[in-house]
Image 1: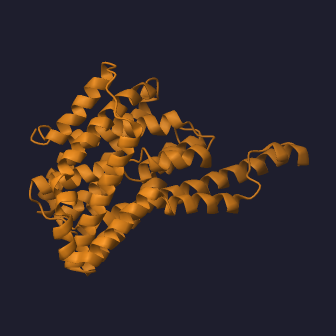
Image 2 (image 1 turned 90 degrees about the vertical axis):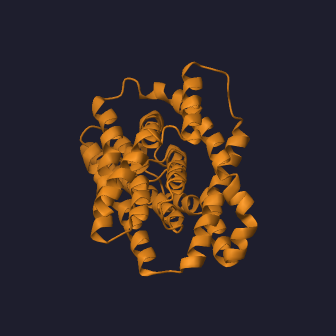
Image 3 (image 1 turned 135 degrees about the vertical axis):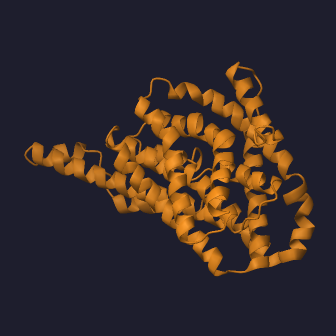
Length: 338
């Protein structure tokens, strides 16, 4: 209940209500983009200042290693399950969406831990950056493999006619397509800003932290509340895309994140990750991308339905994590890890 009374969360609920009643309240797109970039920049600075203070320790390496492992396991496991109920390309797209991460969910979790004065490593911002791209890479590789398989099946089924092979949806140069997608993934402006701000935080250290406190500390909560208002509006307007979807997919959007968070907790227990870091890893594993991955998938896997992976992630998983997931993961991690 305390989490629901947080002003930032209340602004999210207010935005969702305004969207549900079809209000004309709207945050202009350039302002929304600025707020997102501000949050990433402030988060990167906080992470850099924390790394400058702690240095690269075994604990840091363990947390980041678990993050990378989760970024590979979650989309692979998700695809094996989703292919039972979805067309192959849709299964790849949904698995990639849930295998990547939501920066806003992570920022909200960070704010929650700060409000509760619970210790965590600022370097977890680096974990978020590391977890964004593996799912995209796996999705592009899997989609090209599916196209190759379809091409072979079409060739064999039609006597190997060259004209029919040319009709199959196979890129003429799959390697170049993958290279382009990977370049876009690793040079995405938001991700570069996060990593660049973290590097600046490391280089400037404590003096930089003091100088940037009004920017990265004092106004952070207000900017987050403003951005969550916009996300509430967007969530309400995305809900219609979920209507008519298979109950199995809706169940995956609810239960899948819980399973992913449980997997993260298991790894944190195995590698003795502190509770604060474990909570953030659980949040990252349980979140789903609704910005970076859908933007890439629209042209990397045009065979998949955007309303499916975007609607599930933003219409169901995002609000559940914001309202109930973060306090649940916090409670469980504290009970298990102390």
